[in-house]
Length: 344
Image (tube, rainbow, N blue to C red):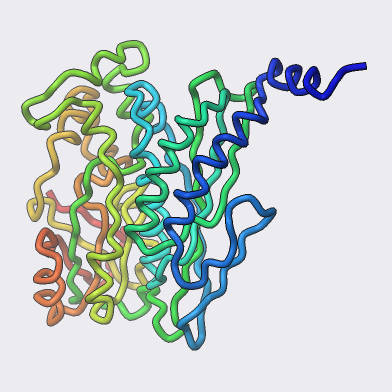
């Protein structure tokens, strides 16, 4: 008969270390506690997380989920694990904020091939720091050891967020009309989209040394530029939310794929490409991969991470509050099948 120790060793030999998982849990508990905000009711470790919605008269819950995608492969190659947590939190915050929602709480899923408690701690440090910055509680998550799915050292990071907005304050773009201005707020880089193409163009899988090469145009190494965290727009736009008719978070699909999601019927968003400078990283990808303009704008954010729609008379209030924001287009009456036009 096997002893309990023998059984535990057999499970560890199969690739799942229960003791390491427990050590990781103890390391991340204080990180999660540090993100507590009003409504936070439970500690890490219970089967479910409790959260009491407070401060709303007619609260509407808004939720979203996403992953960091293949950006984690760059983080793994560079052995820098504390930024991807920022990526997934900020991405999810932006996704619910376009509807007017304030972030309330966040949960993560971390799937990996081999659990190293200190590495999990680094990932969760990024999650906790981003949650605190966005006034969002990290209430729980799941760390799954799946050696049959992930190679040692590999991992996947997924996030789930819940926010709330007053029913009367929902922003859905329904009031957008011809003549309205489109304000663009810069991205901090690729954010969390387009990395499969970027990695192929720079051949980072077979030539990881490319990540350590410093580029004058970037002012840093390629790897550092690729790992720049996804920007959160919550604190930028929240103070002027009353002047906003609609917002589109520019993720996978770029401007053509995301802007139509907020446009009412009968209007087209017309962008002036000359209104902003495409950052050097995107230009490098386009040159190295010989990627045409149309595909670049479909895959990447091209330097614009959030678009804000407003009446012309509110442009100044918004751009004064957000210094790096600028008008990059206008809404027109739709005259053809295109919902988004990007003029050269």
